[in-house]
Image (cartoon, rainbow, N blue to C red; front, side, top):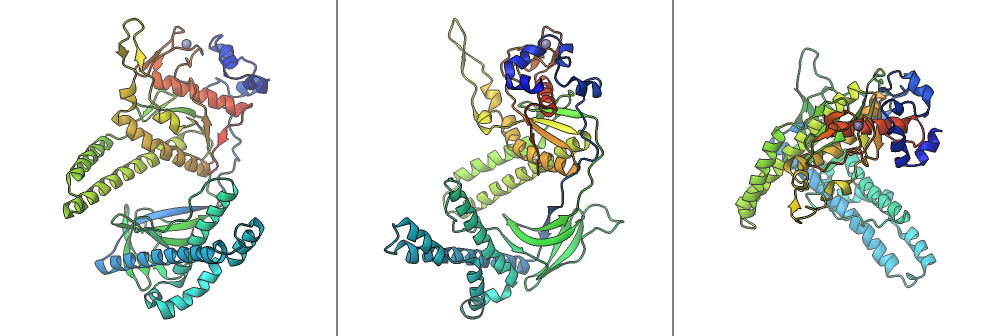
Length: 479
Ligand SMILES: [Zn+2]
């Protein structure tokens, strides 16, 4: 029966639930399950033994500080790694050019394939050449741990593999690129060789951040700002540059995380224009107010930058200021997304979200005209393109991503539904109450009085429950 209703599409579904509030739960869809959950606001629980994500890798990123010499060393090594990457890429391109492309049989597909295979340079051949490079051609590479250099070549190999895989899938990928200074920003120690970390946990009596020494052989010692403890076995260390800041990223293998106890609350979320998000229980998630301040500051800095003469020192300084403002905004967004998704994961068992479609977000509302006078009426375009929207837009993708990851770790569920018509439909009775974007209040004849976004969130929750109960399978988070 359930399958039957869902396959009949949306309109029949609304038709059925229009009959009245009570009809929502007496519509014959898996009635026994609804009875189980009592008042119907709750969704079927998942069995408590539901496993959380299996053995996984977690990356910890820490800001580091270093003295001038060590920073210079880091920059130098990064640059040498980049050079090696580009040289490896050039070698592969040359090999193809001379041995395959200029071969007389190039236009015969079979022999071209054969040639490509025969003359392909493998990562292992390039690895063997490293010895000669270090001892004869470029002695400056002797300073770099050999596994770091090998990792560079494996990165190149990965780029090629991805490229060919995508060609095979019929996509149109870009050929692996030469990396400029701004694109190649990290180098990796793929194992424990060449570096040593003094401590992985903070002393129990210390709260907040502690400084821990990270020794990099031949490069120097840096202090790592250990703002949280590292758990699990450290597998790799990546040194990463972002603008002027350096970070150490430690990837750790972590055993089965403990799932949180099953919660009896579910929630639907509407990502909105006036609020960051509206919850189906009437609460709102607000983006912090300091967002606006940093955005305004960024705008001013960008204007200042546009007044500077190209190639001047002042312009270079202004570019740096703009970059640092961007970084600040990025960090603030990430911070908020982490906190909000953590709150939701801790509290709710099932979180239902609308499936985000970037096309929908960027689409402008249609212009609206008065029927008789032909005058243009407010259509909500300014609200949609306002400052708030730009702030929220950038945060939603990250927020949903983090939510999925956290839910998977905690053994909780994130469900995506199609948000079509959720803002127009009444969550109380199911009738359609037309409203344009500027109408912030939902008021229905059935007596349902709600904030517009809360109403949408309630509809989203209902859709998610419907999807989980049977019929269509929801998109489940598997992170
Ligand atoms: Zn109603």
